[in-house]
Amino acid sequence: MVGGDFYLLVDEALLARKSMRAFLPAPVPRALIEEILNLASRAPSGTNVQPWKVHVVAGEVRRALEEAVLAHRDTRPADDRAEFPRESKRKEPYISRMRKLGKDMYSLIGIPKGDERANWNQWGRNYQFFDAPVGLIFTVDKDLDRMAYVDLGIFLQSIMLAAKARGLDSCAQGAWNSFWTVTRRLLSVPDDQYIVCGLSLGYADPSAPVNALVSEREPVANFATFHGF
Image (cartoon, rainbow, N blue to C red; front, side, top):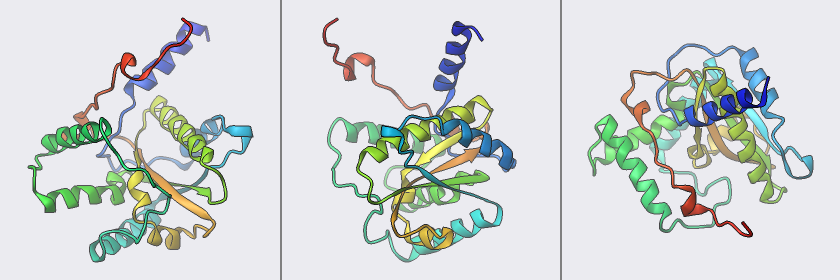
């Protein structure tokens, strides 16, 4: 493949990928998931530690996880603490970006501001993997330093781009970090691993209003500082 064509394919995947929050029930073959994970395993990691571990759930296991986490969520608002340590607090401009995304998304699906029950139910869709047939739960060893989470982020992006190139869509989900006790028990995640996040994987529902959402991006001038040019 000539260089220009390769760049075009990479650019197309980057531009086409976005977080989908409604999926079709069409199954995703295990062989295709393994192909995607195999490609994503080429993601770089500091000193090649490859810290990621993945639990892939589908079928009855996915449904059992969904039901158990939602039942747990209805009896207590969250686990006592986030599984993955998150000490920092968001400030501007991050708060405004987060609120803008929420406002745009809820407008598309008709949830008015202040409707706490509708908000609660929509957030709960995270724990149904937005009806995607496949869910992935990512963990890292607790004794690794924070660079392991940087490595995991690169691995996640590699999965999402490889999936998009094969006609699949995805949604990365930090929500799985908030309700982790049930996940740990049902998937037999060892105590020495943090449950960091999840990922919905499947074929997006093109008719779902929420999938029309396109989140805004800051221009390069707002986040890049060039030295020596």
